Image 1 (cartoon, rainbow, N blue to C red):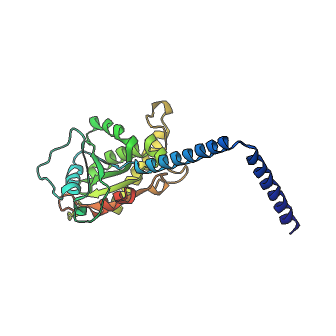
Image 2: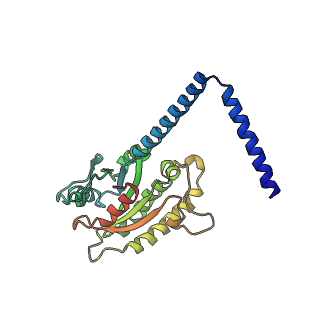
Image 3: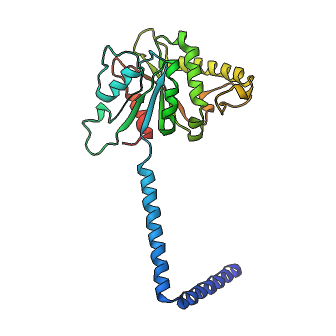
Length: 260
């Protein structure tokens, strides 16, 4: 109780000293100081709101050639598979709300979706968009998964160890496409196989001189078998079918990070 009384006395002394100091300041100077303080506060509030409003709405569709990225792009945009689409040689991009959201009332934030070519020679295009990415959808062909498992895992490993992805903790969706087919592999099987391949990549690349490694970061926990749960950014797994228009899990993932 004595300590509280002492604190109360000290606070009252400070308050009185403050009042005396303010009374000594000429009114013009005092009003000017208050005006500057209010003006600075307003500027800070406006800047904060502007930063919140300019949060990125860019989502990247990446993956190997033939995984079905372009079909998924058109399904998300207008609900059509655009039968006859060819392998993209240039980024296919657009800013829109999902076709399933057209009937919703009120203002909905559009998504800037970029379908990045999967050909190995064109993958540097991905690097151009990563700095502005809010999320990444990595598409895997669940039907032809095993022959492409190694290549897909290497590509995903390069994304997960990319400086932009690690520093910004960009969330990644491992999207298993074409799971409607009878002989398609399940998302759990694909997840486990890719974790095994990435574990091999971790071991082999850690043995190489750091001077020969393009990426600045490693992933996983030292001494433990790799799991996507060990990544600093969130990695989730989902199923989809571009041809059948089953894209709900992709939309839910995107809207988790780009609120409508």
